[in-house]
Length: 306
Image (cartoon, rainbow, N blue to C red; front, side, top):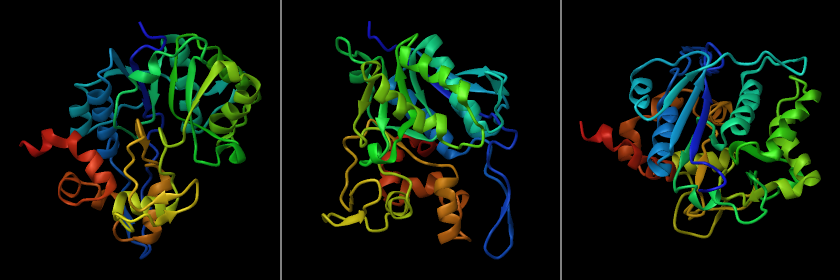
């Protein structure tokens, strides 16, 4: 049996609006908020299930999503209704992202397994990372970009941990100093700081394995829209590391899709009248070749067969 069990954990629906409020475009025309469970969420569930064939797949929520895609996704998961924490160690927790930070650590400590954000596309099984050799640290975490040490960040969008991981317990205990106004303080900066104090408790994976490319505008245009995508060695973007025009993403176990305001705000800015809900469709993924669409396409076969 591997040190890290093949259980998958996802957390979603910790805010009534699911983090997607209505907005106005550049012409001041109202646009609706995104669906409570859109195509990205479905792709995250479907790819995690098909690629990893988990023994258990726990999907934690406080507010249950609705819609056809949610009903379709439920065949792959065990939905778990929870009450998200409003405080930790006496410190108030208001942001849903910070509530998720706490829940993921609690789940990994109790059950062990693989935590994935609901905007992660899985490409190949995590199996080689589950059976950690010898005394390698029992919590696996990815670098966030080539310059992760200079930036002082490790990603918490993808985490693998053995049950009762000492690193996860120390990380959770660090929330005694939690401040809800500090956006990434305990989510991505704290694991970096703790990795320096407890290097024996953690296994750090190369930045291209979990979160490549990063969320910067040129990289996202390349990934989602195919801008600058070709067979040359040209560099599309240097932020977070050199992204080549012909990057094949073959080193990736999964890709963090950054499908929150990081991506959507960039697209609202650059294509104010062509937001995500207009181009993130099954037909576009099926028929338009971009790096993202080609990777996502296999997980929508059941839509094509209709």
